[in-house]
Image: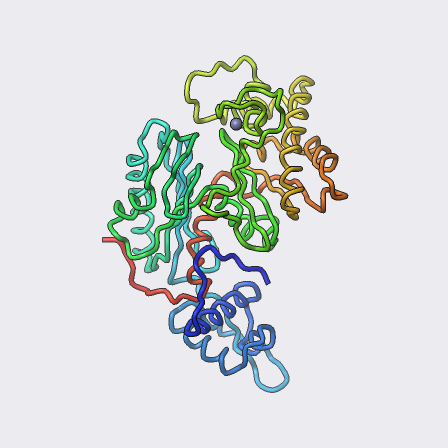
Amino acid sequence: MITIQTGPQPTDLSDVRATNRAVVLRYVRTHSPCSRADIAARTGLNKATVSSLVTELIERRLLRETGLTENRVGRPATMLVLDGEPYAALGMQVDADELVVVAVDLGGNRLLTWRRAFGTLGASPAETVAAVAKLARRAVGRLTAGGRTVLGLTLGVPGLVDITGTVPLAATLNWRDAPVAAELRAALRDPGFPVALENVANLAVLAEQRHGDRAGTANLVHLTGGVGIGAGILVDGRLLRGERGFAGQVGHLPLDPAGPACRCGRRGCLEALVGLPAVVRRLLPDVKSDGAVTDFAPEIERIQALARAEDRSALAGLADLGRHLGHGAAVLADLLNPEAVLVGGHFAALAPWLLPAARTELTRRTLAPDAGGCRLEASTLGAEAAALGGATASLAAVEAGRLPTPTAALG
Ligand SMILES: [Zn+2]
C-alpha cells in the first residue's frame, strides 16, 4: 500500500487508533463506495474495530453513508464514501508573476482555483507574504462562508525551504534567509489551522502522486521547468527531503564542463542548458533580454508556432535541448530508478518536440536496460501543480488519522 507521509507519524500506543483511522480513510478513499465488511476483509482490522472507527469518522463527518446498499448473501451492506462537504484544504504557490490558490475537499475534488497577478520579483519577501495572506484570507472566507472548515494551508515557493519553514535561498526570486512560514502564520493571525511551507517541486510531485496521469505511483520524479529547475522526488511513496529539506536541487547538476555559463558561476549546469531563458536564447536569438522578464508565454507560443511549421532550425534546436533534458533525466534515473520522470512548465509546453530526443538520450545514458523502466513524460497538471500539491499536503494530518476540529475560521 502506498502512503504519502509529510508530517510526523504517530508513535506511541495511544496513537494506534489514529493509525487505524488512517487505514480506514485510505481504504475508503481508494475503494469507495465500500462497506464496513469490505474494509475489515481487506485491511485486516477486525469488524468491531472497523465499526467503531467508522462510527467515529461519520460523527466527525469524514465519512458518510451513501444510502445505497450492496446486496449479498446474508444482509445488505450500507456503503460508505468520504464526506466531501464539511472540510477544505488549501494549497498556494508563489510564481515570478502571480500567486495561485487551490482548494480541495477531503476526496481531492477541486473547490476553487484562483490566480492573481503579482510581481514577486519587484517585491520583498514580506510584501509577497502579505499578498499571499490577503489571497488566502479571501479563499478561507469563501470556504467558511460555504460551511467548510479549513484543515490547513501549504504554500509552495521556488527555492530552498528548510524544515523550519525558512527560505535560505530562492535565487529566481532573489530571496535570502526569509522566515516565510512564521511571517505567513503571523499575517494570518494564528488562523486555527496548520500553515506549512514547501518547495514547489516537492508539492508538484505530491500532486502527481494523487492527481496526475501516474497517480498511485510510488517512485516518481516531477521535474519543474522554468527559469529555475528543481526535482520533487517520491521514493517508495515518500517525499525525499534529505537531512535539512534541500533534496532535489538538480538545476545545477553539472552536465557539460564546456557548456554555457550559469548564473551560479559554473558552466554547463542543467539550468544553463535547458532552463527557460536558455531555451528562449537558443530558439529565438532575436529576443533581447530586457531585464527580469517573468512572463515568457509569448516566447513559448512563438517557439511552438515555429515547431508546428516544421522550421528546421527550431526543430534541430529543440532536439538538441531535448538531448540535454534526457541527459539530466538519465542522472535521475540512474540515481533513483523512478517509474517516471514527469516534466512540467516549459518542458511540458514543448514536450512534443523535446521528448523524442530526450527519451533516446535517457535510454542511451542509463546503465540499466530500458532506462530501468523509467518513462519520460509531460506532466498534465498544468501551471498550478504546486498549489494542487499544497492542498494535497494539507490533507496529510487528517489522512494520518488526526481528527480535525470543525470550528477553525479566520476572523
Ligand atoms: Zn549552475
